[in-house]
Every structure is written in C-alpha cells, then in structure tokens.
Length: 192
Length: 192
Image (cartoon, rainbow over all chains, first blue to last red; front, side, top):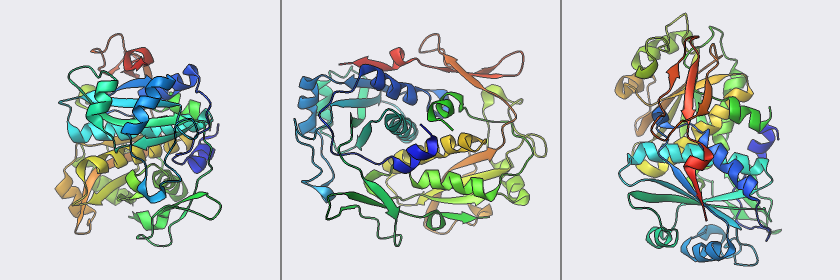
C-alpha cells in the first residue's frame, strides 16, 4: 500500500470486527518493529504476541480506554474487542527516556504496518501493569511498557485540521464517527 | 512509494549529497509528524525547519555522530553534510516519558516520509542543546529534544539479521558500505 495512503488513513481504532488476525500478519507487525529506529541500534525492546481468545479476554479488563469517547469506544468482549494484543517490553533497568523514544518509533512503525495489512491498532498506556505481567508471565528483569490492541477495524475515524492549538479534543459525531483534530503544518513548524 | 519498500530500505543516513531539499519536501516531513500517534492526542511537539546554508553550518559542529563509524561517517561541511535539520522541541515541563514516546513516533513517521521523497535522515540525540537553543532562538518554555539531519543520501546502508542478540554493532565493510544488524522476528517475539 502506498505510504501516503497509509499516513492519511491511519487512526487509532477502538472498535474491532470479531475476526481473528492471521499469525503471518502479526509477524509483519513485529517485522515493522524490528526495522524501526533504535537509539545506537541497541534494540532493547521485546514483544509478546497474544492472540488466543482466552488470553485476549484476560487482558482486556486490565486495559483502560479513552474516557473522552466512553462508553461508545470502550470495547466489549465478543462484540467490539480487539482479537490480538502486542505487549511491548523493555529491560527493567533500561534508560527510561531513550527506551520510550525507541518504543514510540517501533509502535509507529507497527501502526503503519497494520494499516498495510488492513488492520487497526490502539496504543494503550493506561494498563494494570502488574496484573498483565502476571498473566503474560513476564520474565524477571523485564517490564511492560505498553499494550497495542490489534484487529480488523469496525469504525472509520478521520482527522481534521484543529481550528486552534487548544481545540484538539477528539469527539464522536452524530453518525458515531470519530474525528481527531490535528494541528496543521503551519501551527507545528517554524522555518529558518 | 509502497510501505514495504520504504520499511525495507530505510536506514540512518550519515553521508549526504550536496543538493538542497525543496521546502515542499520538508513540509511533507512535518505533515508526517503531524499525523503520527500522540498520547491522548495532546500534540506537545513543535518543529523548527532549518534549511539555510548559514544556519546548517552553525548547527553541524554542535552535533555528534556515531563514534562506531567515525571518521568515515562524520559529515563534513561542503562535502557530506546534511542540507537541512529539523529540530524537535517540547514544552520544558512536558512529561518526560510520554513526550519521548510521542517524539519517537513522530520521528519514525518523518523518517518513512523522507524515504518516500528520496531523502535520508539521521536522528541525533548527542547534541550541545544549550548552544543549539541559542542558535535557533528557542522560545522560552520550550526545550530541544532532538535534531534530525535531512538530505539526499550519498550512501546505501543495509540491514542484515543479527547472528545473535549480542552481536548488534553496525560496521562499515571493505567497500565502505554500512551494515546494520537487526534482531530477527524470532529473537524479538514470543507467542501466546
């Protein structure tokens, strides 16, 4: 798929079709993470691919979804839930800022690769990390950074130009479509 | 350009052709940053696009390049230097970890968009930040996170599978080509 199409159409997905994701597609997402930028090429991140219905069901209640669009975009098991999760982990003693930058790069790459496979993602930071670590039997010496919910989109969110830099709250319109205001290039950049 | 081609061919570039980058292409890079993921859609990052030869020349000595491949991949002004820089800035009081994750996502998106325009990038974290802030007249209340060097590539680095998780040092071969060992999908992921 053309990169510009991916860039323009990718948005966070919070409502999913109840259709499993093929392992090969999940592999493509890890391939995208592997080829992302990594500070000094240290590659500290590791991934746990969760795609059995039992484990997905165990993880879902340990995640929190955007309060701004609740309850309409709070996934329900068997109806609108993701069908896979990727857990992004790092060494417990990893440099917090560099590791976050690496995670951001890897997750952005995963998100683009997902659109390329017809999939959608939600990058989730509001997590019951200790419980998730237990469910996933996270090896000692590693910590959970994020979960990425993955599945086939059952919504078509769009972005629009933010009217001003302080009007950036996303919202559902009367047709239940999510709108995400994004600052414009002119609002974001100065030129020298 | 197809996303998979971008993903497979994108690598950090440290040797550039001495050809200016059109403002329109630099705009595409900011467009890619604007559409990247941002935690809670807060969009705290701002960008300074530097493309005048005078300012690029002032910034270059305030950046440090990979010691592993010095001096062959330490850009020289007028020979192999980038022809533009993007400065990535954040509010001084921004949450350090979330902001780094946002920066990682935005920079990864910029890097893909660069390949899509025939450009190459180097994401630089080793910076004389105070001096750069002075040169760029960074507004009060904002801090510099990173510079991204931008230009037309004058090298063709490649990635290869890392033989083992501790053999990840990148290197120049006898033909002066950069090789970047990347962990494989099987080394990076466990499946559940």
